Image (cartoon, rainbow, N blue to C red; front, side, top):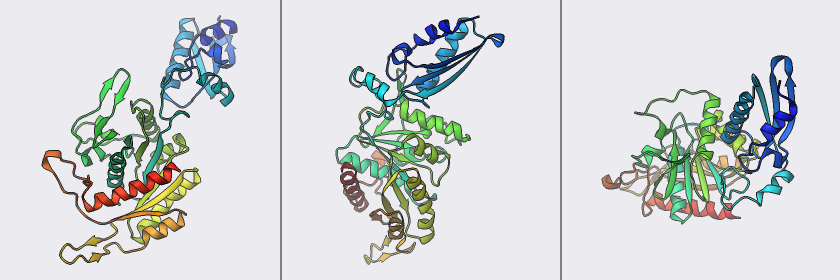
Length: 352
């Protein structure tokens, strides 16, 4: 039967996947328990970051290594190293090594675009806001996190798929924005029939398995409402900022308040409200017609103690068949100019 000393030697030789130091160097073994009658070993291990694909890979290495040594069954528990312990090793990593958007060293600002209900134009806002920030010279990524209702690739006219470089997925770049979407990984617009844990795993992969490079902003087009994906985002990204999209209709604003309340309850800062479909401007007369009513965006912003970043009228982008992107507004389009102003306002606010 394997001894505790042998288990310690075997596990200590493996590396913390984030610090690139052996578990012996990090004092990563917290506890070892052996049940001789069942030939079972339980190990509790502390690493720099838990709940990641790297943790799963380390878990498999520990299990396989111990089984090769004759153990029949292995139980693994993980906990996180103390900040003091992690700080001892951060300075020893090569610059840029193991760079992860979710790591404390990341300088990327996460900005989630949320809504209380579907059909308010949240994805259109996400796409055009990302492009407008890129037009300001910012390095921008966009995650189509609406895994059931993905639409960003079609909206941006993306006809290619991501490539693989080593173990990393290379996002597709369009209009200066790096994009990843569930739509790249299904065939012929097939439906995604997944349960909550699978959604969370895919979302985590979008953060950790994609080669984003250096980003100033990573925007997330969230699914409407307060379901599994929105909850996962709140858990994975505790410092994420949020923009709430609504129409001026009082009911839409009332429902959108739930998404805003969820953000506030999980310590996400709501940095503003965007009122979409605010009015329709008659080209012949120039008169504004408030088809969905008035005041919903202002009321929502007041309720969430934030500001109304802008109002977007109902208007179609100008389509260019040679550079087809059916939901993207050109910089010189009237709505493109409004998006640019919103992007400038957000960039200034988030830089403070």
